[in-house]
Image 1 (cartoon, rainbow, N blue to C red):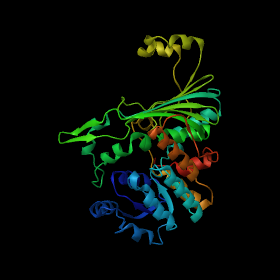
Image 2: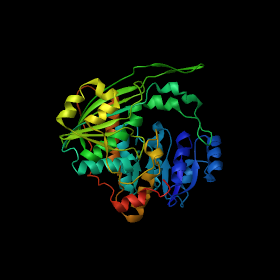
Image 3: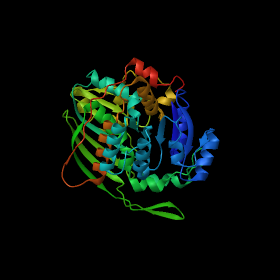
Image 4: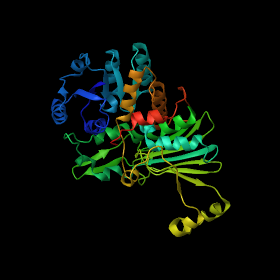
Length: 396
């Protein structure tokens, strides 16, 4: 599959690194509104430099476009790609306005082209292992989901010093402008929707809790987009989820799914190979866990009942399992390319991406009263053994 990249910023190098694990995908060239940034990127990765977006879209050898522009540019860039008849994979969200996102999905359908979007952690080993545990009723019927996506006082990590391999600076202004909810919530929302079906209602709250942030000795950032949100989501299946996103609370990426007979826990949603723990309920454990000494002393915790690691769909070494951050950005692109070649829907289809975009925007805007979700999607299927072999690279 011949691919062109639009946007050579900080994220683009990460994508190129991951695409190396998928030799069936070939990046032909790239373009960016900043000629110097595009030149550095293309020289580093030995790909063709297109002076403009129009030049790339006019190249008939480009079959699929990867939209890695800033979120605020997604709509206009994606619209141009779809109008040119190119298949498209875009970074999240589809657009910053729901009406624009819906227009893009309708346009892709009208043009007869394939359209999908990040994130693709649903295609990771952890998500697929978790999905298998749920299908096997390891904790009975699911009742409640508690999910945290807190990145702490993010500005203290000195993001103004970050640069990609090709020298592109990290655009932290865009991160705060778009808001943590729109930028990050889909990592969890995608799992919830795949596992439990379409969302029905959302009761959201969001706020700007830290409006004046000292990024560096020379700069204080004025934050006007919510840096904290919490939402209670009711799914059509009856499951209720509470999702918290922030750039304020201490770092926490823990997911807990509570069922009738136990709890499933994942400690890091940004690691495709993180262990999935299954804890079964017992009367002894219920009584013991109410005392703080149980949590503070591992010996006592083991006596009460040790975490059981659920058998993963694919094994990973110890270093990868407990890594802070371990994601394959290329997996969704690889699946989209396979879908085109196999004449089947992608495993992360456009209507599903639209649903996630609607949920994320609704949570961040947090208008009064329960929000009634407008979109839906066809049920998704987990990866079978053939799918796992197709999408998980041997060198991963």
